[in-house]
Amino acid sequence: MPSASLPKTSSARRDGEPDPVGTRYVRALLSRHDVPTNQHVITIGEVLKVAYTVAYRRMNGTAAWELEEIETIAKHYGESLATVFAEQNSTDEVPGMLVAGPVRVPCFLVPGNASKEPARNSLVAVRLGDQWMVLPATEVGSSQCFDVASVRVVGVGDRRWRIAVLDDDGDEARNLARHFSDRGCEVEAFTRVDDLVPSMRLRPFDGFVIDWMLAEGSAAELVGMIRADDRDCPIAVLTGKIQSDVMIEPAVAEAVSTYKLLFFEKPTRLPIVSAQLLQALAGR
Image 1 (cartoon, rainbow, N blue to C red):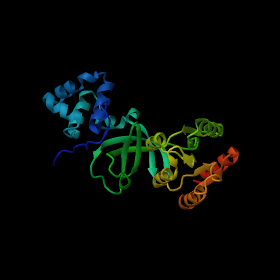
Image 2 (tube, one colour):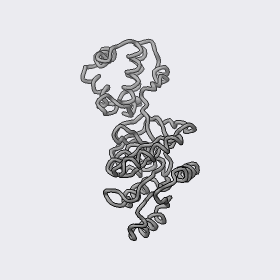
Image 3 (cartoon, rainbow, N blue to C red):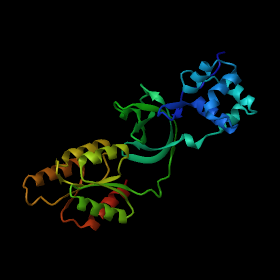
Image 4 (cartoon, rainbow, N blue to C red):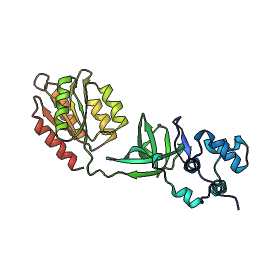
């Protein structure tokens, strides 16, 4: 019977690439017995009586670990396989966001190896900048994805709603952000679409407050982009130019109908804006 081997599922290495799951447990075992990190490969070679290159390939994931090898190392230090695998190191987990349709829930995950062809019914991890996201494989597109060794959902009972405010007038943006912050929200204010888009890709927002007419033009394209990612998040659109530009009213009316928007004319009554947006969030 062939010996069992561990898959090369992993956690993150210092160089940004993942560590094999076997290596994760072996490193934890060696660290518990005060073996310096720079001596891990040499120590593995000595304990298993294999060449340095063989030990190195095990540690960097080029070759899969055999369970018998880990058992040999465990016995050398007076442990068993059971105790080795019972040691779940919480530092392997990284914070992320579990995304499933309109649902966005904070989580902790252990990313695995890069996956070129994940199963369609599986969850995968995608890294966008410093933010990890866990989502169905069918929604990854062309992004590089990783297997998910484990995922742990975090309770959201005390989580603050995350709101994006966009207005090309910096004072208006700050005023809106301050208002929502005073109501217990986590708020980021933006004056340019080009700054908002990367931020919402890295860490999705629960709701948006957007000035319809911006220096770059109307917010129609941005709203469509938001809706492509989240069909149900509340989006409040504000404008003070509907009286001065006859073309704005039909454009806004079409957007409100197409994208299910909340609409407010400037000068706005902020308590009404926040009340409707937060009420919409409470229903999610």
